Length: 69
Image (cartoon, rainbow, N blue to C red):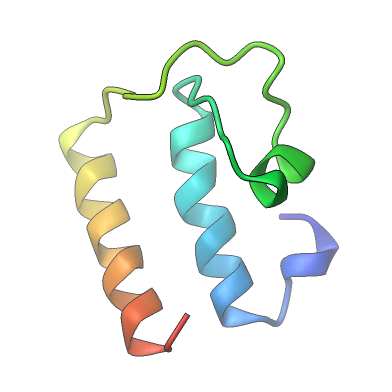
């Protein structure tokens, strides 16, 4: 995890969630995501996540809401 995210729960959750998408070739559109993740080899805007990854993304999103991210 990049140092700029350590200690900031919202940033950590954002990074973890987006790392899952990045691992499947997601083509990020936001400047923030493009500044963190290399999108030169992106392949999709609709990645196929495993059931476990989908569950984890849902958990992260719930934590983001709980923390007001």
